[in-house]
Length: 192
Image 1 (cartoon, rainbow, N blue to C red):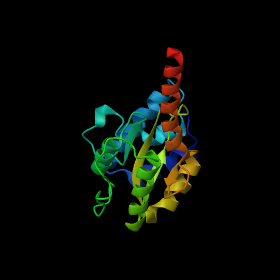
Image 2: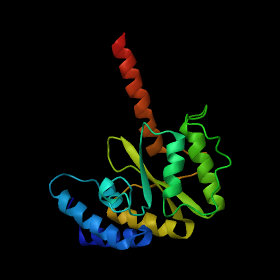
Image 3: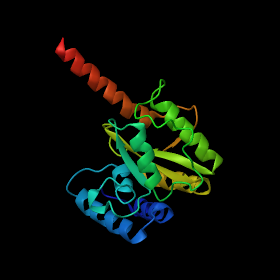
Image 4: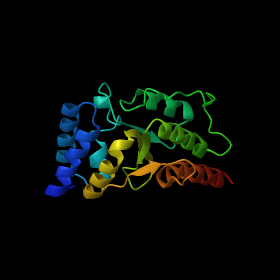
């Protein structure tokens, strides 16, 4: 991805706003931009690369976002979110029943409950889908007082960011989990 000066400046501002380890994040951004010349990157991929835990080379460094794919269960989501730098210290999981299966209403209940509790702590749950194929999504916590700034900067970069709000549609997360249903249906259909 070739960035305009404005996009590059906005990207640096996002990293400064959210990165728990600024030096490592800037190194990762530089690497991603160099690699981006070899393949087409989405604005979301460029933005998430320095902020997410998806790159195993940087797993020991604190992350602002955690990557999940359609195979994830609620225990893994909870465990990975608790490790994030931005996980609110006052967030408890007493509402969560420790099951590794999604509840009767699927993933929505889990994410809506999480968003509701985070709102009470003045923190937003934010979702980013870095790839157009909806294979997975990144999820993180953003203090409410930084949310407007983040959304403005993401718009300048050209990146789509969704705020998870209780009882409101979650297009990115729902699209990722819809893929597993389609994949399962296709496998069952082929067995007929």
